[in-house]
Image (cartoon, rainbow, N blue to C red; front, top):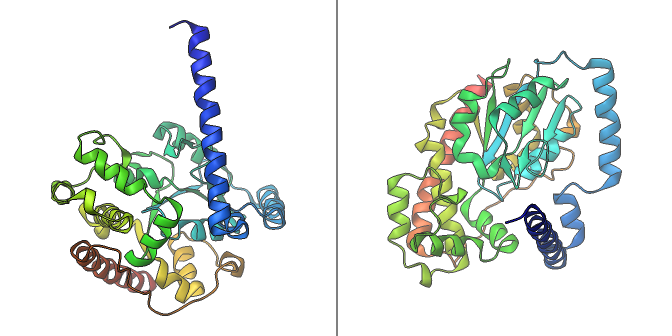
Length: 318
C-alpha cells in the first residue's frame, strides 16, 4: 500500500468516525433530552467558563512545583455515576481533570502508555490529577503499582446498583453488551477490553449462557457482574489506596461522601464539589427484564460491594 493510499484510508476512517459520533450524539440528545446530554457531558459554558477562570487563578496563586500532584484514577463500570464524580472534582481548582475524551491522556477512550501519563502528572502544578480510564479498569492494579510518579497514586472504584445501572446502560448503548457477548461466544472478542483479565469463573459463566435468548438488559447485567467482580478478584478490597464509592450511597448524602473523598485525597472540602448533586433516597424498582438467575448473581455481588463500601467508609472516618 502506498503512502497516499494509507493517508486516504486514515482520512476515510476518521470521517466515518466523525459521522458515527455525530449520529450517536443526535440519538442520545433526541432520546434522553439535550439538556441532560449537555449536563452529563459538561458542555454548559455558564459552568465551564467560571470554573476555568477559578482554575487558572488557583494555579497562578497557589500552583505547586512539578512532581507534587497526586494521580487519581476513577475506574469501575460505565454508567455508574463517574460523570457525577468527575464534574464534582472539576469544581475544585486544585484538581486537574483528564477525562476519557482527553487527547492528552487517552486514545479512543483507552489510557495512553503509563510513561506518558507519568510525565503528564509530574508536570502538573495542581494538587491532584484525575484520570478516568473506565475501559482500562481491569488494569488499575498495574496503574497504581507501576505508574512511578513522585507521589503515591490513588483510585476510586465507582459502582452502582445493578437495576439502575442496567437501565442507564441500555438507554445509552442499547445492544452493545449483547453484541460483545455474541462475539465472545463465537471466539471473536477475546481481545476486547470488556473481556480483559476476567477470571476463569467469569469466562465460564459467560460461556454457560444462551446469549441468543438474553435481553439487552440481561446482557448489561452480565457485564455489570463480571466487571465489578474485578474489584474483589484483583484484591482491590484489601488496598488502602482504593476507595469504593456506591452511587446510591453518594446521592443519598452527597456532602458526607464528598468529605470522605476529599479526606482520602488530602483536599479541603468545598460545597461547590456537590452543588450539582440533588440528594435522593429510596429503593430502585427491580428490573424484571433481567434474567432471574443472572440477577441473583448480581444481587449477591451488590451486597458484597455494599458491605465493603460501608466498612471502608467507617475505616476512613476513623
